[in-house]
Length: 153
View (spheres, rainbow, N blue to C red):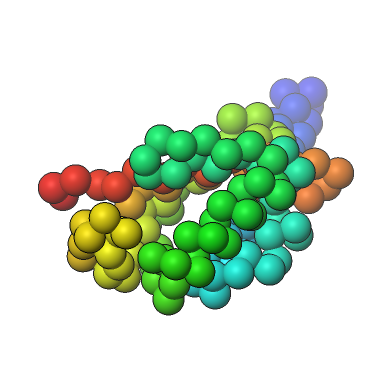
């Protein structure tokens, strides 16, 4: 009898954990989608709702900007110049939970065409973006993003 009770309890706990995991997975995806929406809009007006104060941004050139205010200053500046009107769409997304409060989203984005100030054209570009998303005070928030241009595939 004890064996069946343990088996039943294990099933119930694992089933509720799966439901909780899929709920958290959707909440993490929602953070990525909020970032993409702000990127496409260009002003990052909603970033305060889905980022941490200590948000770090690693741009495709390897530059690192730390702190939400500094990151917003940087991304807004490039979106008013060479990234003005540029949009991202998601090709694929995978999410891994490192702990119950830390997730990594690996996302392949397709970017609309743009040109750098040096005249370098970016057409049909795909980017691998890694998002580190943490759960703080019961809310999932972006704490680090890193963007790499995919070459040749």
